[in-house]
Image (cartoon, rainbow, N blue to C red; front, side):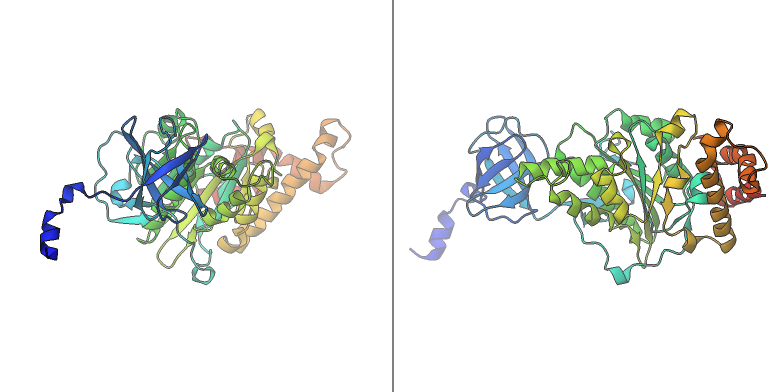
Length: 434
């Protein structure tokens, strides 16, 4: 019998794809064997009993088996269920059809508007950031429409800024103001680990039901840790797609803390030791991998605002502390200002922009220093003035500062529905100092 006769007798319908088998199931991960995989590979897990499949990612490998973290939950799987190698790495389908849409962490639409059209390429979710010497200098201002930020914490195109606040202080409201008022051509908003009801509420109240030039990536708190983790990377990959098309992009992510908590779940489940408040080392390695991907390229820019939920208003929280060291500026929202009815509750003295002197005129920068000095004097002597221990005329500089206190307050307060042009803001800013 020759080889042709043998090939003719092979029934192709009986050929099967190579697969592995589940050998162990824990609360959040699966162990499997029988496939040659690499860390980061995507596998398809098939439940024979319940006849459904989910995707998972290979998180760790030993000499006998490998650990898979599923994108969904593991209920319904059992020992010996099949695992198939799906593809290498994760990618998201990018194109101008994403604008105006709400997608999940895998780039799939969740807004009941049908299939996403006008897709141009599959973009890898996990990428290395730009080489340091290929980054553009941050020397052009980025207007947000928020008076306190544009005047005292002026941002630059390509800057990475953190918004630090406790729960219920006003992060989402400030996010909506920046998204509506900024001068970015494309806006990518990542809502990571938030309550499900906040997604439609953010669109309705904070964006006035307008998704013009906006893409929303949502991974709510009830989704798996892997979906919450990669929701952030998907949003960054989408922002990079538009930046590489020559656009100035705003990336707004809420919140870094939920993203870190997702990686904490994954890290601890795969055997990593906790090193700081339960966070494993991979969390602190992952933050710069995400944040450093923002910035200026030769084609466009990504200006990123990352919100950080400060646990118990403790600015020394490990995630807040690590984020501050990576970012190019931080905006601190304080609860005491919220209690006073001061919105947005930005504490100017505790906040900073590391590029303000590079993106504003010398006159603007000098005015910024003068007003910061005035705010510092008011803060230092507030208690003395309130208890009557200070008498007018003792310190002319303090007298001048106290005389401007109400005018400064009126300037820094802003209704969430009212946005200001940058030039208008600076003109009003100078009037305060006169």
